Image (tube, rainbow, N blue to C red; front, side):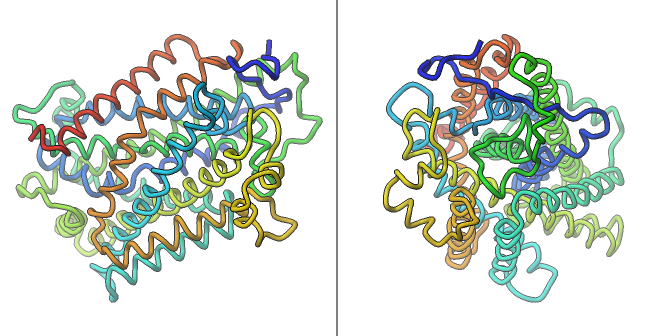
Length: 486
């Protein structure tokens, strides 16, 4: 039974649920998983994974795949709330006990900084890769990357971004897998890396940045829930407003409340499988870069720093495939990083728009975008004053954040700093702090769902284990940052 409106211990489920996709029709719903994969394989794949492969071979492969398994649990549980309730995950966070909207403020303020430096750092990495093979410097190509990505996010919405992510993911998987297959080791050497164990002389500060960038960071967990809701999983999230719901469900397809259970199960399976597709895609790409590091960089005794990783991989693969290898690896690197710029811009601007509309509301059970704009502070009305009548306040805010926070300000950072690794390090601090917090907040929220949609003890335990893992990781990371370990 659903909770009454005044009940603050549980969450109400959406009253009506459309039929979930069946059979081959499920393929049309893969967009959120592939978009998430593109957001997850950027800087970590290029900067850190080949270095770890060069230094330790396949000894830490088990850790890579173990983290990927935890990540699947994390993002599928982040998507659960939107599928069952028709509300965004951050909307759910606003109902957690404590001072009004404290969770939203804890996420919002640090992530504004993380978005600026994160997108700027990724764009600078793309610029660095392109400047190495084409005329023009790193700043020029970084700015062009930002301009093209911002234009896609602003003008095309979810449909254009997800289609671009699909193309980029297919290209990246094809190149990375073929390249890795060319130099693939004996099966026994690779398989031995699946047995848990630590290298004889493990350099903890060297390994920590890699662990923190395996697949998505803290906001990537939240973004999956937004992309699933925008695509229309479970009927979509009504609060996403005009222009953002990608799939409309005719009224005749909607079941009455008494028939919701099986349909909820079907949508949760579709969402879970799509999350698995995203994690498998990202893991396949990152594993391919681990193979390239172990087989190309390792025998040469090369452990390059920063953007030199891409340069060395390109040079060494060209020795295997000639100029074809050179250009294929260049394309793979640019696609991986450029796809991450696109997905990160969309994810951050979508999340910030939602937070901005949630903060003026109380209770978060009633109201909506128009009420938040009407009753909110003058600043909110000013931020949306430029929108035409046909555009909802949520879409207007998303465009504004994409242009300013994920577009203009990262461009300024690139021009001023011009060092991708230095720029990305600031974003890493925020992600390290936020990941365990978001995992435990999601666990707390999902435990308050009605029994029909509440995760079982095994899933809750797995999500708690993921939160514990990232809490321990954060402790090691900050100990290293403070010079306690070395």
